[in-house]
Length: 206
Image 1 (cartoon, helix red, strand yellow):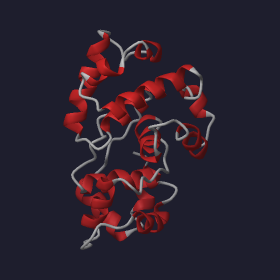
Image 2 (cartoon, one colour):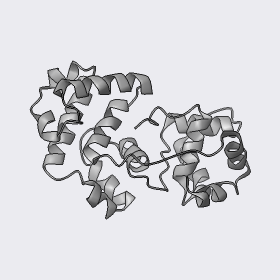
Image 3 (cartoon, helix red, strand yellow):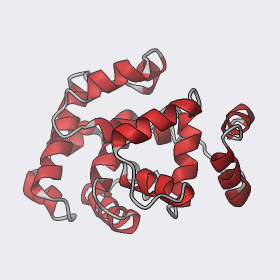
């Protein structure tokens, strides 16, 4: 993790204590094709990491390929076939929609992402049905390695804040957003530590 980010976060006494307890966190972006990253995120929605990993493995097995399936291959697959992997009907439909939008050029490539701001990527991808703010935030953090992403609606991060700050209740998203401003422009690092405080995010394996 960026040393500048650690030094910046240590200016906050609570975060400094958390960093001391946890130690350095290794965080390297996956740099997967955005289509693959979005599918991973959709599968992980509202599931534990273990359950999502099982479904992801079954999803890939449908296509019998060594690599992650291409959007064109996914589009040739029926909703019912996709659901056999354990996907809900809604998630299967979302994945087909993401595949179609990738073929249409709406989902940017990695190269295109490098030329887009976080806000531009967010605006472009959340226009796709089934792709919400959280899904794009996971792509920005775990796939692109953007340094200042702070998913205020993530329950794990809110729980981590509650634990690390000794609060009786989890903060509301707007409260977390206000508090998180002090950690800019390294809010991604803050999010990773808050997730660790809550015993780690289920998305860490992307």
